[in-house]
Image 1: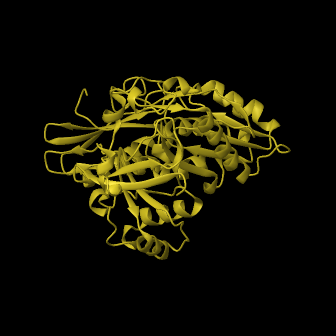
Image 2: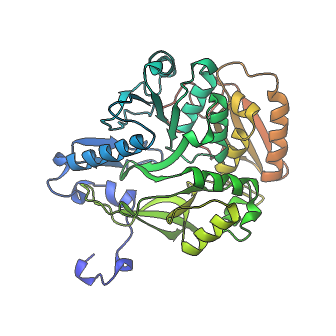
Image 3: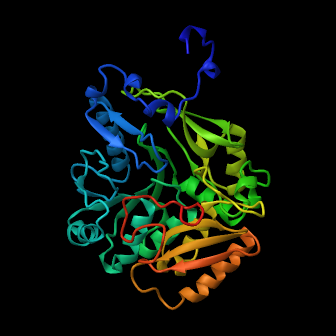
Length: 408
């Protein structure tokens, strides 16, 4: 565009991954890609082109200061040693000067060794990773080896409200010690994040969607799940949405100087930015004070459209699985919604260890729920860990794909 023709913000075009990363070099600020001190690749989940972060020295220092501020808020400091256990995949770094960092990545045995053998030497332990891997660690970690001052931060994919309750219960920690955030490689980590108050409001909406009868997301969620409620720092981000495919799509513009200065960058996530009146209404309905910036995040645009006209969301299945401790203990959390002829099928994967005998009853209840959600003719297929056809056993590097036709 010709910048002299832009009279206001709305005149600026939207950008997205295809626009920027098909040829990233022209988008990079001086001195160019060689000015990057770190290159962070995305998961590549949505296919080529692959997005990435180009991190300058100043941005790296700012990210470290931001992380140290989060750690200081939970008591970390030079006189109170903190262990940060980074189990994020793909070598994603968590910069900090306040914590000792261990990086077992997605190696379960090494992560458990760090959490059991090294953690007792520290005043607090912060576990950072993606939700399904952290859930697996929670299943395996002996109760007597859980650090009494354990904190968990997760993200990387949409996280069910029930997930936090399962993990906290399995580890015997308070739910407010579990935090959820949303970032992206292109812009950075911890862009949107929940708070104990926002998490409480989400749980209230999940238990009773009628608390806000005309919430803008109810047509999409069909009351099967509540969107994640997250906040952000105004000085760091400008957050807006655009209509895309009949849904509001999340758009971000970083306000801080960046080597890759993205403007009106469309992430594709389905979201609603709540205005002041909506925030006040939500606060009153749920009985908790809320921050002045709230985004309701429903997840990625992926959904399965059935032959009967139903639109099935992975987030609804996540809530059902992690909302039942029997299922959350016996199943890995990976699943696939498929259309097979006129029917919808929910494929689920058992954990690598033998599931307890309660799985049969829990699976029958899951099938009853899925029939109500997906319509008559739908069914649930339970696969062993090794025989699950959509994801390699023991692969914690790749994110699951939750929708698609058989064999996709």
